[in-house]
Amino acid sequence: GGGGGGGGGAPPEADPDLIDPALTKGLQSYSMHHGGVMEVLSIDDDPVNQVVIEDLLVPEGYVVTRAMDGDEALALLQGRAYLPDIVMLDSQMPGKQGFQVCAELRACYPEWLPIVMVSANTDEDNVLKGFKAGSNDFVKKPFSRAEVLARVQTQLKLRDMWLKEVQGNKEKSSLLQMIPQQVIERLQKGDEAALFTDEHKAVTILTCQFCGLTELSTMVSNTDLVLVVNDLLAAFDNLRTKHDVYKVENIGEGYMLVSGFDAQSAEDHPKRILHIALDMLEAAELVRLPNEALRLRVRIGVHCGPAYAAVIGVKHPSYTFFGATVNVSSRLESKGFPGCIHASLAVRDALKGEVEWLEYRDQYIKDCGMTTTFIAKAGNWQQAMSERDVVRADRTDGGASPIFPQATRSGNMQLAYRTVLHASVTASTGDTSIAPLLNIPTPGTIKDMERSAAAAAAAA
Image 1 (cartoon, helix red, strand yellow):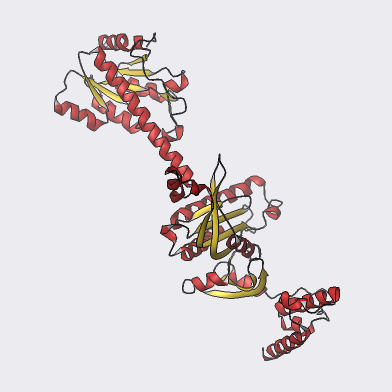
Image 2: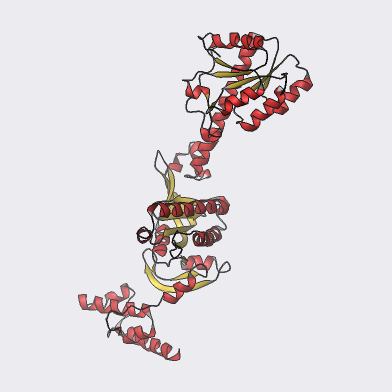
């Protein structure tokens, strides 16, 4: 081969950022390794034709590498970590024909590698045979300098255009992981409002948290734990694609999904979130730590309602949701039980026919007030329900607190909590009028509740 100076028909300059190894089976071009200088691999059994190709291309700044037959060319490529920028291949050679070599090149190497067939026979059947084998163009012998240069430069430009398009699609695909399609389209149309807050009247938010990672890290190696968590996150991402829901964020031990803000999910967003939540519980059950006795569990909280969203960030933008619905979903997760789906009344009402819901407990949730929450009959629901009313007595002898004897003996944790709260507020302020504001029963109401609880305990 050889190299030489430039001329008026200099080859197009290679873009060092253009060829992504992920798009090219891990291979890059000669020009990527040699400062943008283009390499032409000339495969021809005739030394005279090789000299002619070199005389045409080397003065224009190309490097020409010779291979005298197809096997030599394939062996050369297999021994390198990069490909030529373009191949010129004689169609008629002894032994392995050029058409067969072309088909093998196309089978082994990426589509972006241009192959130009060279032949004295350019009738229609021969040309079609070359195209079917995978060639990009045809050049007729004897060579015309202007034609050879034009066809080589055209194929290199087409290669770069193809790579830019593929790279653009890849970048768009990556962007779609951060920003929904309809928001991208609005931004592309110059809709500056897409940069500001969107108000969504009804969405369903899922918040998921890994349970006990800190404790698990003391029992298994960090490497094993990271691998298991990564496998589970990858499974979650696949499920997100399956159910077509949007991942808001994945920070630390948390994972948030939302549905309902686009036309595709406007009618069935609670169902989409429920089904992915069920699949997430199942996926978590399938992962195994080296110590089989240990399990990696997740808590899931789900709430539906209005929410706001906006594109946040410049270098790594994301379409972030905020508002009371997001907060309630997060608190349902934190107040939930490992291996369970903990949902609000709104979710239960929207999904009555999709899964059996079990009343979990009445509790105070900020941005929601006192409310009844529910556990889906899935995952670790039996343990959650068996432990929901466990009362941990303050006294070491295991006896009930004298402030609410009937409440604790009946197992009514909510009554016990309210009774103690009322006593605490009254003792600290001397003002019983605060109780109604905090949804705390008055002493008279407490007596009625205790009587009801005692009757219920006796009946049981």
